[in-house]
Image (cartoon, rainbow, N blue to C red; front, top):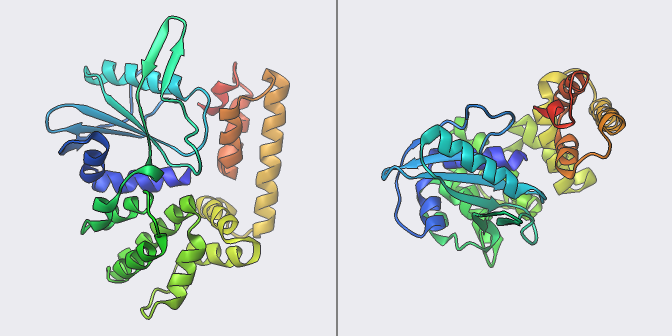
Length: 299
């Protein structure tokens, strides 16, 4: 998920306040731990934060339903314990729309394991919105709010007061996270109506998002704009239509090859294929030639 990267960036800069809301106690992060865990293939937690009292908090960000999510969390727990000799406090932060689409436990014969799942849509994020830091404010926008419009307006005014070199980066983060709440149209309207200057055309990526949004729907435009931004280096000089056609063809071919060799594709792998860019799909297609299992193709 592209939202994951943006949220991780915000939390890496200022994790303390959100952690206090999640844990229900005052905390202070002493350092961010590496998520490169030995003996792990394709298993990397989203965020590992060490508190000043030596506890480790594992935050996992999830925006799409995943059937075997609990087994992934159990794998993270074991590897984190082996690596840091401590049992982590595990919290899965649900970012998706609608009801939570991940379990909060494994309850199988001979195996009982649980962890916290927090739906950020139901969180009271007033303190995050009141913070003087934009990192907190952007995260606060994802919480339980009666009216998002004043929040969007306030964030845009705050972004407009930042240094020009930082402004476009903050605006991009706002647009990305707005997509989680269907607020891209509101962001566009507020930018156009504000008596201050925020020129989205200064940023080619943002301009593309809004341009496509006008033609095909603002939310769809956001998704296509993100995809174009991720593959821009690879697709330079090609028309957008050609790039999209090549990407869809690569997705179709990889899916058919996987089905032919290994049978039906698990939902988790199918979702990864659907969200991958062209370069990643090409890498996976090459790995498939030597893979012994479907999962090895994505390692």
